Length: 78
Image 1: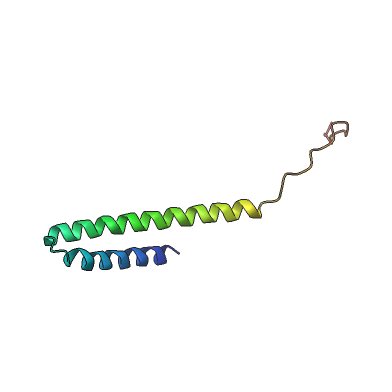
Image 2: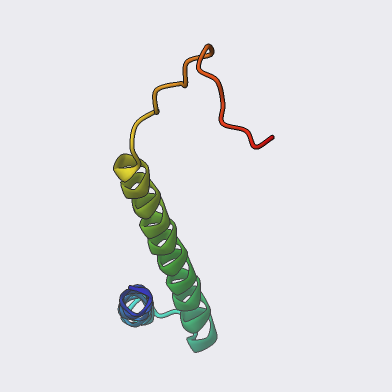
């Protein structure tokens, strides 16, 4: 899954390089802005993945267990 996130970030980097270069930005500004887009996309997808995994795990956990009766003696070794 991490490879997919990284590849989507790389795709966003390449697309943003093309988009910024058509707007006549200097080369250093183009690469810097594209790198910022890469970082933002990669972090956003990582957070989205982490939240979705947490939600799925929470749904799969069993519901609250029934409490033990208070009058039932516990098994202790004497």
